[in-house]
Length: 304
Image (cartoon, one colour):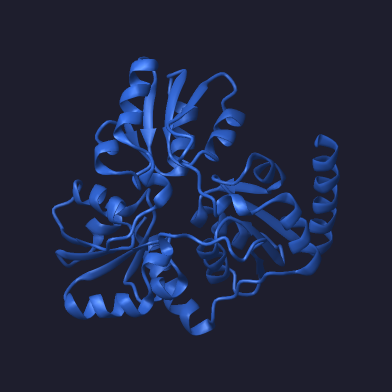
């Protein structure tokens, strides 16, 4: 197996150089995919890093909306998604047409759109946010009425930090929904010295039991900065590979083996190689949608 991976890695790196490509891997990818990437991180941060490079090709090891974000920020680069079926159930819980309908019901509301959404949904929004800056973005809006899409649990978390009147779209991440309060309670008993850190896409009762509520990048920073030697991690299991790699002296306990995103795991080294060989599948956001979606992203970046 190791020989097979070494052979695949050599082929990928050779072809990457020939294609003038950059490989991005989200924190939820498998360890072997993370290890061949130029950058590992969260979705927006990865797209921003890729935009700063002189690479002509971006291989995004993540899910479809992430590749779209890369296309939004780097329209002149070719964006490859090694498995076109790697989608996001939460992003699929809202469409641009349904958002237009809801906006008609709430004409005075500012639409704050989590970046975990399709490009055409971003294009129908006033401003985007990440899980790390959602509170700040919501607070920045002039209107008191906020329509927050598509994640109701991130939206609920934000609503506990602001006095804005928030209408929450009923979307959710199935992976984070599998993390239960009883998992946290049991692990606190088993590891009484451990710090518990969870993602804000988790249920409110899970968030209530955590020491810290952080984005994936925030979790990685916390792990490096905390003096705690044991950390209970409440997000998708793929992040544990990076945490262990960056913090070899600390113990990371994943909340639940059920908290796995099957779509993230569709990307394999073989598919990365094939994608570079065939220069497919390509993800390209139409220019009219791209410009509107980028305006919502740029509005966020001006604030944060």
